[in-house]
Image (cartoon, rainbow, N blue to C red; front, side, top):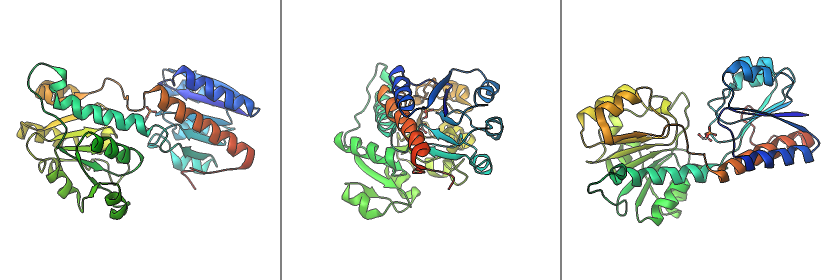
Length: 306
Ligand code: 3PG
């Protein structure tokens, strides 16, 4: 079988070497398409692939249609808003992700972002400490739980809101469950977003929540820009001169935010939450193993379009 790794944002070399070893030891061949310029290049490369490994690369209906031999696509990472699951299902292509594999890298970045904003983006002047501050974790999944653990180690109080996780589990882990988002935003100096971009969450973080944050409140977004209501974010930042926003995915109007709000906002130049050698290896190798298991035994663990 031919396994194509197609990554506009390439994996670290060690991850590519590891993927190649796993794929070839299982008797398959590996093809690599890195830093490609447009979708047409991906569509051409996938034409004879039996399996596809991607990161945030867009696996559209056109890509699926171009991939006549495709049996499985694995998103090496957590969020799968880049996969057209309906197109995969219609073409009988199994779609998977690798949940948890890059979670630590993202959690470390979320913590770093809180400290970075507390210290005025490392510019001169008096900042503040995160110890003793309260952080609200919006969605207590793989990343959220790790942010909670690290925040507690820094002496922060941790609250979380997740309607899908039992409150007892949070309490057992030293986290205060919030009964509503409003309660959490009202109580927390930082809110760290760990929700996927799905119809229920897209555009859901807006003025109604942000206006509740205490003085100096900071929103930390290592999730997706789509979950933010950007016009409302812009308006509340103008209205509340104490609020801050830091994001790993530049807002659509980031230039405007930078110009209007200066050091109260920050966006990484390119999404970097999962950009560690460790996360690349963990997610890349997991993807390769999932594909080899699928071809060897039909294993469909982590299938998204069941
Ligand atoms: C994810 O959903 O796993 C993260 O956003 C990482 O995405 P990336 O692989 O494109 O860095």
